[in-house]
Amino acid sequence: QVQLVESGGGLVQPGGSLRLSCAASTSIFSINTMGWYRQAPGKQRELVASVTIDGSPNYADFVKGRFTISRDNAKTVSLQMSSLKPEDTAVYYCNFNARVSWGGPWRDYWGQGTQVTVSS
Image (cartoon, rainbow, N blue to C red; front, side):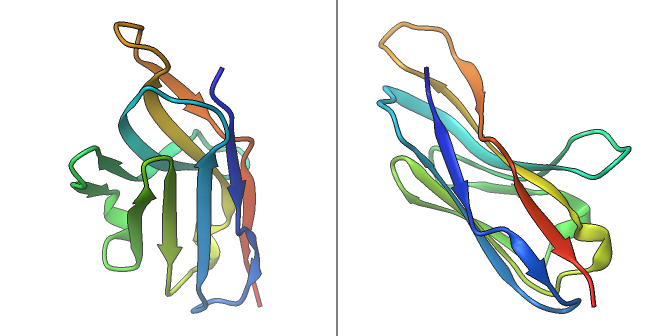
């Protein structure tokens, strides 16, 4: 079972910045995509950004130009968030689409979530 450990959430004022990181603490054979999702109270979980194995990023329209996703190494992904808005307040979840053995199934693995609150 893949375990993802997130860090970097917290309270920030509007216009401020935060950096989230996510690392796999267990062995992974191969990763297809790494990504970040978020879920605000009363809303569905939504994709924020993802990056493929070749480093190609994909962003939700509501974060383009403000957030940057990066693969720091083979098992770590970060999300640099700038120009934060109150509507960015949510629990942010790390996601890896990966397999743990050659020929094994591709599965989605999730972190435990980290709270980001944007408020003055």
